[in-house]
Length: 193
Image 1 (cartoon, rainbow, N blue to C red):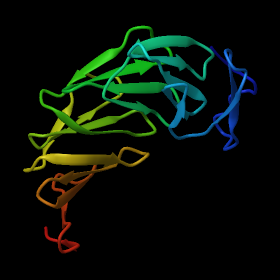
Image 2: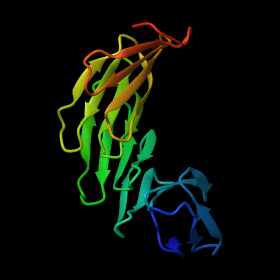
Image 3: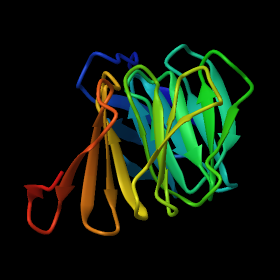
């Protein structure tokens, strides 16, 4: 039901216009979520994802390919548009523009936070306090312990710095060159370790 009216340009910050076949209405789409016809539109790097009413996502990849993928609790599109992540309770499904078969990453516990770096390194954090770092082509993650339920995670574009906030008010920041994290106490806003 959607057709692109202008070329998808990942380098452009200008809106891309789409038409709904039923109404022929013009819908501007940017790098954010917008409600469209009872669905959600997300764009990044020229890839467009729309949530369908049937529990699936329709993906128009920046390569021109179209896919229908399973829905999940959360949707994340990588900065370059080459990867789409859908999250279920304790697993992440990783969809790539150049593959028809998804990669399944099993966290082993309820996932609370997910982030993806520009190089497609993925981090996940769970209720048991475990942070996992998934390299782009590996199903064997590196694990770090937060010592508290993880509330959210973040990763730098170069994947050299990661952070996890815990339910105990502590934020831990790891650098790829250091084994020990910097520990920030959210309550006092001081580095405590």
